Length: 111
Length: 119
View (cartoon, rainbow over the protein chains, first blue to last red):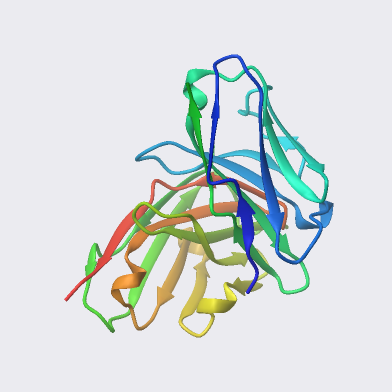
C-alpha cells in the first residue's frame, strides 16, 4: 500500500519561516508526481495553494512556495502570518497506476 | 469562476448504496484536460482521494475502493455522479467534489456534503 507521509504537527512564530515536507513510500518524489499542496481551516473545504510541484495558483500568496528537496515535495511558508494557522495536505500522483494519494496532513500552529 | 456543489443523502443505513451528485459551472467539460473528481474526509481525519473522470470519459479510482466505486458524467446537465456501494459506518465522511486540469492541477473544491452511515 502506497503511503504519503507528512509531519503531523509543526509550530512557527509569526514572521518566521517553516517548511513542510511530503514523502512517498515508493521512494524519491520527482516532478512526475505533480505534487499539489492544500490549506484547510476548520469547517472549510481545502484551498489549493501549489500545483505541479512549484506553481502557485493566481490566488496563492507569494509567501507560499513549492519545491523538491532531498527526494521530497516541500512547501515553504516565509513570513508566516497568524491566518496561516491551518492543516496542510500534499497530494501526489502515481503515474504508473493512475491514482492520487493524499498525505496525512500537517497541523501548523502559529504561536 | 469555477463553482462546484455536492448533493446527496445525509444519512444512510449500512449496506446501502451512496449516490452523490456534483453540479458544476464555470468550465466546459468538452475542453481537453478538464476533469471532475471526488475526495472524502472522515470527521477529524485526513483527506482521501476517491475517483476522477475526465473530458474524454477516462476514469480512475482509488485502488482500495475500486470494487465499490463508480463515477460518471452528464455533460449536458453539468453533473458528475459518484456511487459507492455497500456503505459502512467507516464510510462516514464529508465528500468533496473537485475540479482538475490534467493530471497535475487540482484547483477548485466544492463546500462538501456530510454523509453519515448508521443503523
